[in-house]
Image 1 (cartoon, helix red, strand yellow):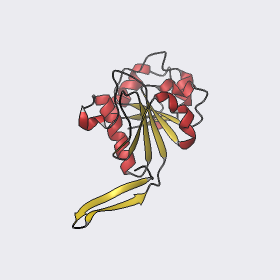
Image 2 (cartoon, rainbow, N blue to C red):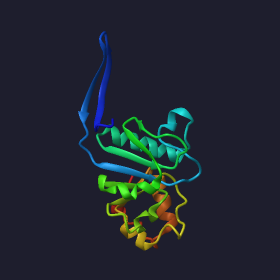
Image 3 (cartoon, one colour):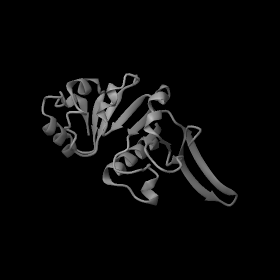
Image 4 (cartoon, rainbow, N blue to C red):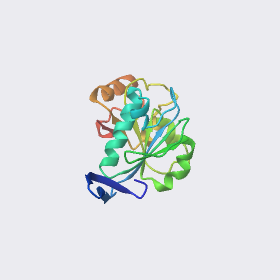
Length: 179
């Protein structure tokens, strides 16, 4: 919630709702999701549905929040933001760089080039939910070396990215990848 607590359980009683909570103790994590194919936010899972890539980001964010991390998503959306299942949903990916003093790590979705931003002073991980990221404008040895690591939704996605990029970007090092 807004105060930094995670709800453990809630049960209805005769005098109202009894809620058990604990204080968040994890990392402060932000997902940087620049505008892609449409406007969205994690809460759209329940209202209008999301595509596979957006759903994977939303579900990962929810799981991280459930484990006690403070999670913020920065996405392009055309409606109000707020809290959803422990995630602070925010509009405008442009604000993320200025708010990084409140973060421990950024997970960049389809935007590994974020590490080139001289204003980024915290670790940036790339999130790979599918393949097709061998574009030379996004990847270079400079980008690959600045990334803290690569997170993959599956072994298939990991193997596909490494196959696409080969050794040019320095990605095959298995210590730089997590599934």
